[in-house]
Structure formats: C-alpha cells, structure tokens
Image (cartoon, rainbow, N blue to C red; front, side):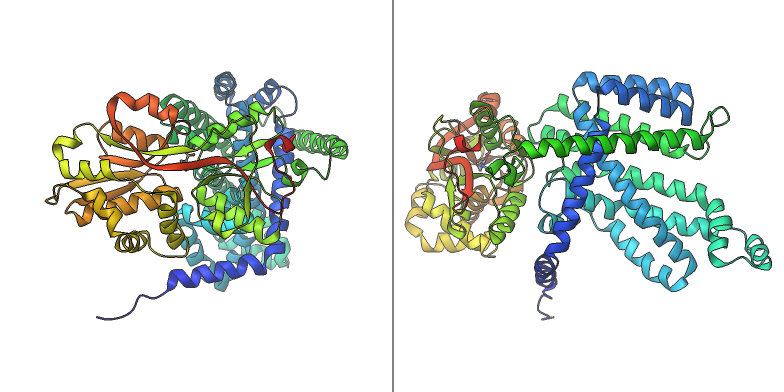
Length: 576
Ligand code: PBE
C-alpha cells in the first residue's frame, strides 16, 4: 500500500505554534496568576521556623486520623527536616495544594454539570479517558511553549493529569443519589438548585471527596515529571539524583515524597469524618485553619510589597526575576554556573533546573518578545547562528577556558571489536563540522539524515577515521549520549560511520551520570561527549579507572552565561 504518512505531527505543531501566538496574552496572565498564587502559598507555609508547620500538620492529622498517625506525622516531618529536605517539601506541598485547589474549583462544577446533562457527560467522558491515558510527559511539551519553564507548566500538566477522578466521582456521587429521595424533593416542589444543594451534594460528598483525594495523589505522583521542565521541590531532588546517579539522595528525597503522600492522603480521606470530630466540631477546626491561612497570606503579601519598593526596579535582576535559565541538573555547565554564582557573590540569583530543550524554548520565546533573559550556554551550538547572542565576560574565570571533547570507551572493546575501537579512536573533527550537522537537525532534518548528509559531503575526513580499521560483521555497538545538541550531532555521525563499516549500532539516550557509569560498567560500548578538562571532571574522576579515554575528538568548546545582544549587560559582574 502506498498511502503517504499523514502529517499529524506537523498539524499539531502548527496548531500549537498558532495558539502560542494567538493566546500569548492569556498564557502570560495564567502564568503570572499561578506563579503569584504559588509563591503566596509557599510563603504562608514557610512562615516562621519549620517546627510551627510541623506541629500544625501533626495536630491536623491527629484530629482527622487519630493519634498514632499524628505521632507518625511528627516523626516523619522531623526526619524530613533533619535530612535537609524541608524547603523542597514545602515547594512540593504548595504545588500539590495548588493543583488540588484548581482540580476542585474546575472539576466539581464540571462533574455536577455532567450529572445533570447526559450530552455533557457523553462529551466529557472520552476527553477524560484521553487525558488520563495520554502519557503525562506529552503535556509538558506544549506547556513549556505556553507557560515557559518553571513551575507553571508543571502545575498545568499535573492538573490535566489529575482532574479526571474529581469529575468522574462527582458525577457518580450525584447519580447514585436514590431516585425516591429526588422524587420526594420534587413532590415538595424543590427547585433544581434546592435539590442540588440540599439533597444531591450532601449525599454525594463522600464520593466526591474520594475523587478529590485521588486527584491530589495523582498530582503528587507528577512532581518528578514536572521537575523536567523546572518545577522545584522534591521532584527536582529526585531528578537530580537520577542524573548524577546519587543513590543516597534519591532515596532520601523519595522517602520524603512517601511521607508527604501518606500525610496528605490521611488528611483528605478523613476530612469528612474526623476521628476526634465529636470532641471539637469540624466546622470550628477548619474555620480556625482557614482564618490562620488567610491571615498569614495577607500579612505575607503586605510585607512583600514593602520589600519590592526598595529593589532596583530597572536592574537586570528585577527584569529577569533573578533567574538564570539552566539545563539538566547533572550537566557540568550547571555545576560551573553554581560555582560562578559563588565566585561573584550572586546570592540573590537562582539557577533554574530543567532541560536543554526547555532552555532553548524559553530563549526562543524571550527573543521574539525582546524580553531580557539569561541562559547557561555553550558552543558549538546552533543558537548562536539563529539568534544574536553574546557570552557575558567572566573575569574570574569560573567557567574555565576553551575545552576539548573526548571519546571514551569501555574496557575490552579493543579486543571485542577492534575495528570499531579504531574508528572511535580516530574520530576527530572541528567545531564547524559539528555545527553543520547541528544546523540541519535544528532546521527539521532527521539526525540520521543530517549525519548521512555530512558524511557524503566529507569523504576525506571520514576516510581518515576509518583508515586501517577492520570492517565489522554485524557486531553490536552501543553508544550512549545525552540529548544535548552537540552530542546528538556527534553521536549520530560517528554511529552512522560505524554502521556503514558493518557494525550493528544502537544509540541510547541517557542522563549525564548514567552516560559515564554505563561506559564504566561495560553496559555501553562508548560515548563521544566527555567535556574536559573542567565541565565533566567530577564524573571523569569518579569513573576514570574503569574506562579507556581515547583522547579528544574536538577542540575549542566554550561554556558560560549567555544573553541576547539586546540585553544591556556585558559581564557577569553586571549581575550584582
Ligand atoms: N553541555 C553540552 C554539557 C556538555 C555538553 C555544555 C551542556 C554539560 O554541561 O555537561
């Protein structure tokens, strides 16, 4: 059959591109609104020393779910604090609370509407099915374009993923109200809203709350995913641990998530029938809590406004919210940037963690609006040819000078596949070669095709790499790489050359830590993306006894803080 590929992806692409522009105002409004709300919630939760919130939560859990769980809450929160995950936990709780609130505000009315109108239910149900089964990662992609990186796209993606149970259970709860009660209400001449508020909702509340409880749990399960686009909190701690292969940190942060899940679950489950509800009326408890929260929120916002007046409103810091847009938490560049923040005493600044792709999306967005932005950048990179950018001067040398990229292979590859070993050893090219491949990929060419195109155009270079190398006989070669534009270009190119020489090549995309660990423990055959002597020195030193360093394949890379030309600063010192 000869049906051409339906350009579904292209259609979605252009639709999203159109939305991004058409609704830009709305998206900015939503972003600012959610960001603002979230920082108020986080500020309220972190007013005073941790012990205050710990005690409040302990009392609340004791009240809803008996004292043994109260004791558990006290101990687990003290442990979280002791391990150093308190601030992250506050962030996570704030994110989950906000997603939960949005779920209730939007989900319950929708659920009621579904229960009242069959047509609405028939339309909403398949949409909910779709929202729940579409991998949550997928929502992150348009979310970044609409809402920029940071916590907002994470909250939106969690919200989409988590809202279904609230809608479904509200609908179900109302429909399950016995027919005869409705008939009795009708017989007494109750209006639709009287029926709803006096009969249906009270009877449906337990089911609805079960739905809200599930939504909150689903939102919590999204925290790690959301950290890929820059949401802070325990999820980011877990993601960082994965990308640096830090087993201990992964366990501690994971355990903190478990504790918070148990606490939130027990509170929301027993909200309606608190264990000690007979001793103190729920109304009183929840009113006091609400008053406390609102009161603190008002005080906190007022104090904050005062602070804002004193700041230099025109400085680059104020314009960018003291944020530097970073990339994957494990990247060497992130470590260098943290050092630079220290070297230049830039304590007010935060470095956002996310991914290279999210960083570029953010740059693209700012650039179209000519908005100020500071990113962590490196060359070679196509972004320097697509945008007018400049490196900020680095008089203290925190980012080091020009570097090399090394090829590293596993021990034993030389014996197992001498031809492949020789090709990898002889692989070497210039930044301009790499850039040529990168530009094609950015312009939409498939990486494999871009690699082939470069290989066809540069037979001399390629024949130097393959010179004297024995052809393969379908031996498997597994190359690992991180999804940085530089490494995509180099890995696909050398992979293609190996394939043309008769090897059965697999390319596996991984995080930074696993890239080094994989070659060191022999589960991968090699990689061509070790930036030395500074960027990856820590990974290099950790694993250097367990792999073979074949030396450099490229010379002349650069790392640093990068801004568009239209941003009016020239040096990292100007950030002060
Ligand atoms: N980079 C690109 C990597 C190395 C390649 C600069 C983003 C890093 O920072 O680890």
